[in-house]
Amino acid sequence: MEEEEDDYMSDSFINVQQDIRPGLPMVRHVKEAIQKEEKQREANQKNRQKSLKEEERERRDTVLKNALGNENKGFALLQKMGYKSGQALGKSGGGIVEPIPLNIKTGRGGLGHEESQKRKAEERLENYRRKIHMKKQADEDAADQFRMRFKSKQEERKIEGDLRKSQRACQQLDTQKDIKVPKEIWYWTEPEQEEKDQEEEEKDEYKGSDLSVLEKLQILTAYLREEHLYCIWCGTAYEEAADLSSNCPGDSSADHD
Image 1 (tube, rainbow, N blue to C red):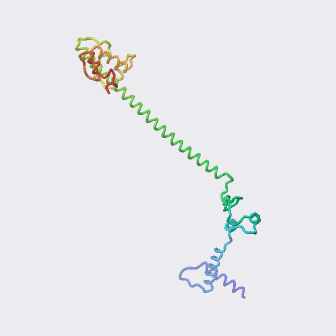
Image 2: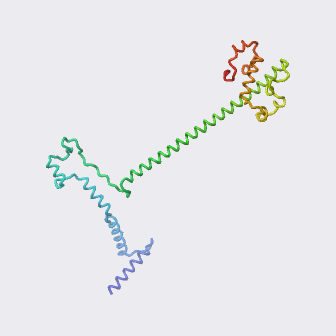
Image 3: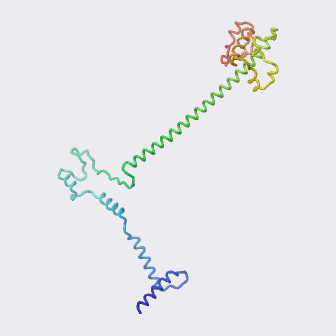
Protein backbone atom coordinates (compact mmCIF):
# COMPACT_ATOMS: atom_id res chain seq x y z
CA MET A 1 0.00 0.00 0.00
CA GLU A 2 2.81 2.39 0.92
CA GLU A 3 4.63 1.54 -2.31
CA GLU A 4 1.52 2.42 -4.32
CA GLU A 5 1.29 5.78 -2.55
CA ASP A 6 4.96 6.47 -3.23
CA ASP A 7 4.50 5.63 -6.89
CA TYR A 8 1.45 7.85 -7.06
CA MET A 9 3.31 10.77 -5.45
CA SER A 10 6.25 10.25 -7.81
CA ASP A 11 3.97 10.25 -10.85
CA SER A 12 2.19 13.33 -9.55
CA PHE A 13 5.55 15.10 -9.07
CA ILE A 14 6.63 14.30 -12.61
CA ASN A 15 3.30 15.36 -14.08
CA VAL A 16 3.23 18.61 -12.19
CA GLN A 17 6.85 19.30 -13.05
CA GLN A 18 6.11 18.72 -16.71
CA ASP A 19 2.98 20.87 -16.62
CA ILE A 20 4.12 23.93 -14.71
CA ARG A 21 2.27 26.86 -16.18
CA PRO A 22 1.37 30.29 -14.74
CA GLY A 23 -1.99 30.32 -13.01
CA LEU A 24 -2.08 26.56 -12.16
CA PRO A 25 -2.19 25.63 -8.46
CA MET A 26 0.98 23.90 -7.22
CA VAL A 27 1.11 21.36 -4.44
CA ARG A 28 3.24 22.66 -1.56
CA HIS A 29 5.53 19.69 -1.23
CA VAL A 30 6.10 19.64 -5.00
CA LYS A 31 7.13 23.28 -4.95
CA GLU A 32 9.55 22.61 -2.09
CA ALA A 33 11.03 19.69 -4.01
CA ILE A 34 11.65 21.88 -7.05
CA GLN A 35 13.33 24.58 -4.93
CA LYS A 36 15.49 21.96 -3.23
CA GLU A 37 16.52 20.58 -6.60
CA GLU A 38 17.49 24.07 -7.84
CA LYS A 39 19.60 24.72 -4.69
CA GLN A 40 21.31 21.37 -5.14
CA ARG A 41 22.09 22.22 -8.77
CA GLU A 42 23.62 25.56 -7.72
CA ALA A 43 25.71 23.87 -5.03
CA ASN A 44 26.99 21.31 -7.52
CA GLN A 45 27.90 24.10 -9.91
CA LYS A 46 29.92 25.89 -7.24
CA ASN A 47 31.58 22.78 -5.89
CA ARG A 48 32.22 21.07 -9.20
CA GLN A 49 35.45 19.19 -9.41
CA LYS A 50 38.37 21.12 -10.82
CA SER A 51 40.21 19.81 -13.83
CA LEU A 52 43.66 18.26 -13.49
CA LYS A 53 45.30 21.22 -15.23
CA GLU A 54 43.60 23.70 -12.90
CA GLU A 55 44.74 21.75 -9.84
CA GLU A 56 48.31 21.56 -11.17
CA ARG A 57 48.35 25.29 -11.90
CA GLU A 58 47.05 26.16 -8.42
CA ARG A 59 49.61 23.89 -6.73
CA ARG A 60 52.40 25.33 -8.86
CA ASP A 61 51.38 28.96 -8.13
CA THR A 62 51.19 28.19 -4.43
CA VAL A 63 54.67 26.67 -4.36
CA LEU A 64 56.20 29.48 -6.42
CA LYS A 65 54.73 32.14 -4.15
CA ASN A 66 56.26 30.61 -1.04
CA ALA A 67 59.96 31.06 -0.29
CA LEU A 68 62.18 28.03 0.23
CA GLY A 69 62.46 26.85 3.81
CA ASN A 70 64.93 24.77 5.81
CA GLU A 71 63.13 21.60 4.72
CA ASN A 72 64.48 22.17 1.19
CA LYS A 73 67.81 20.33 0.89
CA GLY A 74 69.33 22.77 -1.56
CA PHE A 75 68.45 25.76 0.61
CA ALA A 76 69.80 23.97 3.67
CA LEU A 77 73.14 23.40 1.90
CA LEU A 78 73.32 27.09 0.97
CA GLN A 79 72.75 28.08 4.58
CA LYS A 80 75.55 25.78 5.73
CA MET A 81 77.88 27.63 3.33
CA GLY A 82 76.94 30.98 4.88
CA TYR A 83 74.06 32.05 2.71
CA LYS A 84 71.35 34.18 4.30
CA SER A 85 67.84 34.74 2.99
CA GLY A 86 67.64 37.79 0.72
CA GLN A 87 71.39 37.77 0.05
CA ALA A 88 72.77 37.71 -3.51
CA LEU A 89 74.48 34.56 -4.72
CA GLY A 90 78.18 34.28 -5.32
CA LYS A 91 81.30 34.58 -3.22
CA SER A 92 81.41 38.35 -3.66
CA GLY A 93 77.62 38.76 -3.52
CA GLY A 94 77.34 39.84 -7.15
CA GLY A 95 74.92 37.15 -8.26
CA ILE A 96 71.15 37.15 -8.54
CA VAL A 97 68.87 37.72 -5.57
CA GLU A 98 65.59 36.45 -6.97
CA PRO A 99 65.24 32.99 -8.55
CA ILE A 100 65.18 32.68 -12.29
CA PRO A 101 61.53 33.13 -13.37
CA LEU A 102 59.68 30.06 -14.51
CA ASN A 103 58.11 30.37 -17.95
CA ILE A 104 55.30 27.87 -18.38
CA LYS A 105 54.75 26.67 -21.92
CA THR A 106 51.01 26.38 -22.55
CA GLY A 107 50.99 25.84 -26.30
CA ARG A 108 51.18 22.50 -28.05
CA GLY A 109 54.02 23.44 -30.37
CA GLY A 110 57.43 21.81 -29.97
CA LEU A 111 60.60 23.50 -28.80
CA GLY A 112 61.67 26.26 -31.16
CA HIS A 113 58.20 26.49 -32.71
CA GLU A 114 57.62 30.07 -31.53
CA GLU A 115 61.03 31.19 -32.84
CA SER A 116 60.29 29.51 -36.15
CA GLN A 117 56.91 31.24 -36.38
CA LYS A 118 58.50 34.58 -35.48
CA ARG A 119 61.21 34.10 -38.12
CA LYS A 120 58.62 33.21 -40.78
CA ALA A 121 56.56 36.27 -39.88
CA GLU A 122 59.65 38.49 -40.22
CA GLU A 123 60.46 36.89 -43.59
CA ARG A 124 56.90 37.51 -44.83
CA LEU A 125 57.12 41.14 -43.68
CA GLU A 126 60.50 41.57 -45.40
CA ASN A 127 59.16 40.02 -48.63
CA TYR A 128 56.16 42.35 -48.51
CA ARG A 129 58.41 45.38 -48.03
CA ARG A 130 60.64 44.22 -50.87
CA LYS A 131 57.64 43.86 -53.20
CA ILE A 132 56.40 47.34 -52.26
CA HIS A 133 59.87 48.77 -52.93
CA MET A 134 60.15 46.99 -56.28
CA LYS A 135 56.69 48.19 -57.33
CA LYS A 136 57.55 51.75 -56.33
CA GLN A 137 60.83 51.55 -58.24
CA ALA A 138 59.05 50.14 -61.31
CA ASP A 139 56.48 52.95 -61.19
CA GLU A 140 59.25 55.55 -60.95
CA ASP A 141 61.14 53.98 -63.87
CA ALA A 142 57.96 53.92 -65.98
CA ALA A 143 57.31 57.58 -65.16
CA ASP A 144 60.91 58.49 -66.09
CA GLN A 145 60.63 56.64 -69.40
CA PHE A 146 57.35 58.37 -70.18
CA ARG A 147 58.89 61.78 -69.46
CA MET A 148 61.89 60.94 -71.65
CA ARG A 149 59.66 59.80 -74.52
CA PHE A 150 57.47 62.86 -74.15
CA LYS A 151 60.49 65.14 -74.08
CA SER A 152 62.00 63.38 -77.08
CA LYS A 153 58.74 63.74 -79.00
CA GLN A 154 58.58 67.43 -78.15
CA GLU A 155 62.15 67.92 -79.32
CA GLU A 156 61.40 66.11 -82.59
CA ARG A 157 58.40 68.35 -83.22
CA LYS A 158 60.47 71.46 -82.44
CA ILE A 159 63.19 70.38 -84.89
CA GLU A 160 60.60 69.70 -87.58
CA GLY A 161 59.04 73.12 -86.95
CA ASP A 162 62.45 74.83 -87.19
CA LEU A 163 63.14 73.00 -90.46
CA ARG A 164 59.86 74.13 -92.01
CA LYS A 165 60.53 77.68 -90.86
CA SER A 166 64.03 77.50 -92.39
CA GLN A 167 62.60 76.20 -95.68
CA ARG A 168 60.14 79.08 -95.92
CA ALA A 169 62.85 81.62 -95.07
CA CYS A 170 65.24 80.05 -97.62
CA GLN A 171 62.62 80.13 -100.37
CA GLN A 172 61.80 83.77 -99.66
CA LEU A 173 65.44 84.91 -99.44
CA ASP A 174 66.46 82.91 -102.54
CA THR A 175 63.57 84.42 -104.46
CA GLN A 176 64.64 87.91 -103.42
CA LYS A 177 68.07 87.17 -104.92
CA ASP A 178 66.39 85.95 -108.09
CA ILE A 179 67.37 82.33 -107.48
CA LYS A 180 64.92 80.24 -109.49
CA VAL A 181 65.91 76.76 -108.35
CA PRO A 182 66.80 75.75 -104.75
CA LYS A 183 70.24 74.34 -104.11
CA GLU A 184 68.57 71.14 -102.89
CA ILE A 185 64.97 70.27 -103.61
CA TRP A 186 64.15 70.05 -99.91
CA TYR A 187 65.57 73.57 -99.28
CA TRP A 188 62.20 75.01 -100.26
CA THR A 189 58.69 74.09 -99.25
CA GLU A 190 56.13 73.03 -101.82
CA PRO A 191 52.95 75.19 -101.86
CA GLU A 192 50.58 72.24 -101.79
CA GLN A 193 52.61 70.68 -99.02
CA GLU A 194 52.03 73.65 -96.71
CA GLU A 195 48.27 73.12 -96.99
CA LYS A 196 48.46 69.58 -95.68
CA ASP A 197 48.08 68.85 -92.00
CA GLN A 198 51.01 68.00 -89.78
CA GLU A 199 50.49 64.26 -90.00
CA GLU A 200 50.79 64.28 -93.78
CA GLU A 201 53.85 66.54 -93.56
CA GLU A 202 55.60 64.08 -91.26
CA LYS A 203 54.92 61.26 -93.73
CA ASP A 204 55.62 62.95 -97.06
CA GLU A 205 57.73 66.07 -96.46
CA TYR A 206 61.12 64.37 -96.27
CA LYS A 207 60.34 61.14 -98.08
CA GLY A 208 63.11 59.75 -100.23
CA SER A 209 66.01 61.35 -98.38
CA ASP A 210 68.67 59.59 -96.36
CA LEU A 211 69.25 62.64 -94.17
CA SER A 212 67.52 62.96 -90.83
CA VAL A 213 65.42 66.00 -89.94
CA LEU A 214 68.15 67.29 -87.61
CA GLU A 215 70.83 66.90 -90.30
CA LYS A 216 68.69 68.79 -92.81
CA LEU A 217 68.10 71.56 -90.28
CA GLN A 218 71.83 71.92 -89.59
CA ILE A 219 72.66 72.01 -93.32
CA LEU A 220 69.90 74.48 -94.17
CA THR A 221 70.60 76.88 -91.29
CA ALA A 222 74.29 76.87 -92.21
CA TYR A 223 73.32 77.76 -95.81
CA LEU A 224 71.11 80.60 -94.58
CA ARG A 225 73.89 82.02 -92.41
CA GLU A 226 76.51 81.81 -95.18
CA GLU A 227 74.38 82.82 -98.16
CA HIS A 228 71.95 85.27 -96.61
CA LEU A 229 73.49 86.11 -93.19
CA TYR A 230 70.18 85.02 -91.70
CA CYS A 231 69.49 83.26 -88.39
CA ILE A 232 66.04 81.68 -88.05
CA TRP A 233 66.18 81.78 -84.22
CA CYS A 234 67.08 85.47 -84.19
CA GLY A 235 64.62 86.11 -87.03
CA THR A 236 67.08 88.64 -88.45
CA ALA A 237 69.06 89.04 -91.65
CA TYR A 238 72.35 90.71 -90.64
CA GLU A 239 74.15 93.19 -92.88
CA GLU A 240 77.66 91.77 -92.51
CA ALA A 241 79.25 88.49 -91.44
CA ALA A 242 80.98 90.27 -88.56
CA ASP A 243 77.62 91.60 -87.39
CA LEU A 244 76.18 88.09 -87.48
CA SER A 245 79.14 86.64 -85.65
CA SER A 246 79.13 89.23 -82.86
CA ASN A 247 75.37 89.65 -82.30
CA CYS A 248 73.98 86.17 -82.93
CA PRO A 249 74.35 83.83 -79.90
CA GLY A 250 75.07 80.77 -82.04
CA ASP A 251 74.04 78.46 -84.81
CA SER A 252 71.67 76.21 -82.81
CA SER A 253 68.39 76.51 -80.96
CA ALA A 254 70.07 75.72 -77.63
CA ASP A 255 72.34 78.79 -78.03
CA HIS A 256 69.24 80.99 -78.15
CA ASP A 257 67.50 79.62 -75.04
